[in-house]
Image (cartoon, rainbow, N blue to C red; front, side, top):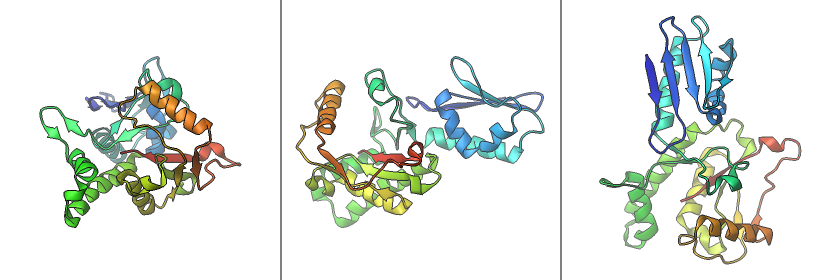
Amino acid sequence: MKYQYRRERSEFWVTIYENDDASYNISTSHKYVELIDFFFPMFENDSPTKWRQSEAYSSLWLPEGRYDQNVVKCFMNWCFGATQDVLWLYLNKNISPYFDDELDFCIASDFNFVYGNGRTEIGEAEYQLKYNVSTLSQSEQAKYADIIINKMMDNCRYIPIGNKANWYLSPMPALESGKEKLAWLLADEIAHRMGISFINARLECNKPQMKQLSIEEKIETWREIYYNDKVKIDKRVVSETHPQNEKTLVAKL
């Protein structure tokens, strides 16, 4: 029996084979072994062969007697949610040279717009709060904000957070006036609800509107901003003793 979990235009996938000899084989891309090991460490611990890498993917063998069937069922349910509830974004050829070493995982709550079906629920909520907020009543604003916050909070359960003391949450750097914008307010609220330190990333210069710029132009713009020390943060992010353990969530809307 073959169980396949994936979503169109999303990078994370899992394939599970239930074999005739009552063993299981689990396959995924190399990058997401870390994710599975975080939530289900017992699989690698109990596998006599551990994760093995081929050129295209990594696989794990669980022979009969080396797994709990209830845990396998729980894993299958988790695979379905982890692949269907969120989009796992991948680096394309245009941006991978710049972010390959910095970005562990990048997830999105959903598409904003599905051709033929219009805006998604979260896409409609974002649209209303970004472009029509002045026409909304307080109850409508609260309704749309709750849709986004609840979805983002729900998605965070798929992020391998672990010790929250080693994590920070930050919006994209903004001018002082930008702190009243939706992305900043959402990031602040989510950090509070999750119990993760919030980073105040203050932009100390004006920047051009980015939507019309090419990827290369956007990267060059931000590079110049950081090179000229025009972003200030209110917390030290990198640990002097365990810098590899420090992680940051970045909220982008």
